[in-house]
Image 1 (cartoon, one colour):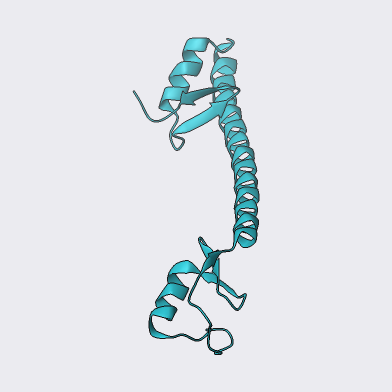
Image 2 (image 1 turned 135 degrees about the vertical axis):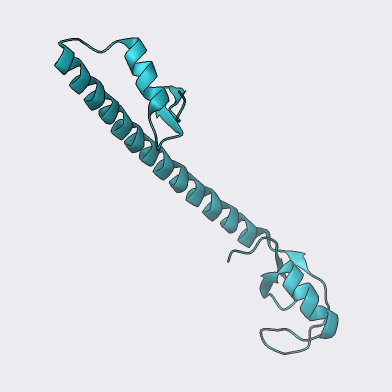
Length: 128
């Protein structure tokens, strides 16, 4: 688990603020060394906080990229399935797909709530 509020004690060790505050309520010793602390003063460790923030931002960017890739893949699967469905129906009738058919099939499509297609979002949940 990442620290949310890293603080440093006078002996130079860094802890999560709520945890070290709890420790210091019942002890005047360092939890790391068990040596007496000259003060219970806590200082925000900005260097550690900055590193944590950078790590979190990097992980968020990775997750966003992964989600974008997964959404794009899901949309490609949906588009292919819609195209296959329309193609089979139209081939049997000797027709090409119409916009009305595409819209009707998108409304009936089950299993997918939202699909990002190009720059627009289309609802493809079960609607009759």
